[in-house]
Length: 118
Image 1 (tube, rainbow, N blue to C red):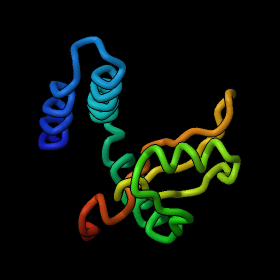
Image 2 (cartoon, helix red, strand yellow):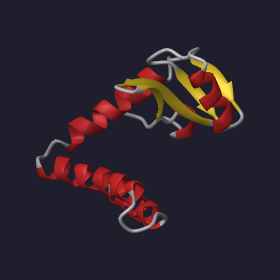
Image 3 (cartoon, one colour):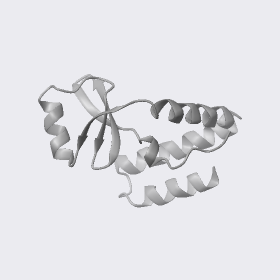
């Protein structure tokens, strides 16, 4: 947990103060601290392991070398809600938002490193 918080702190500092990215990273850190305070962190970590195990079985439906290629595919209307894609080696899920479809960063199992033993 402490190493994760240190990583989040380092990532947060790579964005301009007050930016949406910095705020999002800080929110993730505060959420982890909140779960620890409520004594729910172990349950969340178990959920994360289960989520990671589940996502290992979800196939990547399309791979793109660049974000531009992926955005063009999305704009053509070929994407469907829930599809998992790889853009420049990183995982994203297509999600439905009020203004249409967009990509949500969703790390692939290989991005998360080797599975931990339970």
